[in-house]
Length: 358
Ligand SMILES: *Cc1c(COP(=O)(O)O)cnc(C)c1O
Image 1 (cartoon, helix red, strand yellow):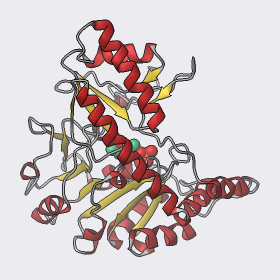
Image 2 (tube, helix red, strand yellow):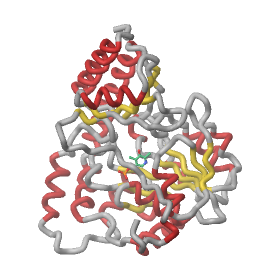
Image 3 (tube, helix red, strand yellow):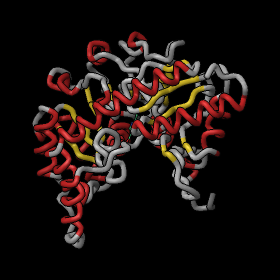
């Protein structure tokens, strides 16, 4: 730490992204990216915009908002495009939390929530998941606090129904509920239609997972017009040109090619179920997932050991050295070929340990 850093950041512990090692070619199943490339039209649209990089991009994202509104069945005034959904989460914490207004979220969820709370000096009300690692909606009803829930949750993959979410949103009309739908296209049911009914609901989505644009950085906040106006005021106070030219064009083309991405999502769901069954046959307990990853544990090997053994064999997965989930491994669902490589390596690792039923 330099002697210049403001004291208010002295104890800040930053978010730790999944590793992106360059020492060798890994089968990369650790950051929930899509294994499928962007569609050819998306690549062409981004490339065409590259020649205009000397000019600022449209700060209002006019075209993109129009197209995204049609995609989500809302009006352009209900949408704020952002630089990955991390940015809309940041803006939401900035907008709705302060020292007197805590933000509640589960003990096991997306690692950015506590970081933003810490950064912005918002008291965090950390609510434990149930024993089966599911969210109990009753814990959040009538809390009188801003609430952030990932649905489906990460890294568990478990989802709430829109009825369960609605019971939370309706229970406290004076506080905002943020529903982070980063993984919604893999089998969950979106709460976007509820924004018509509840002005205290903000839904966030991203093109990083189901639409193969993790490196392009594109997300959306979706909510009633006044909520979006507040968040837009903050965006213009932080970074008006938050979604760059290439990404705006890529996002528009991705929406035009929505069928391609939904087909990929269906394939990933099939591959997920195939992989879950295979892991169960190997003795793993696998949480029921509505996301593009699986969260699994084996009685035969610890989460840390499995992570290390897989990495040595060229397969990257994610392990969280955290209470209650220390024995689990989070595995991104890739192509069927990638999952077969994963499964072959797990079989070999379990055989080496001599404790495997395979
Ligand atoms: C990946 C992820 C995000 C953020 O993704 P962006 O790349 O910033 O759009 C947000 N929430 C959860 C739960 C995620 O897993």
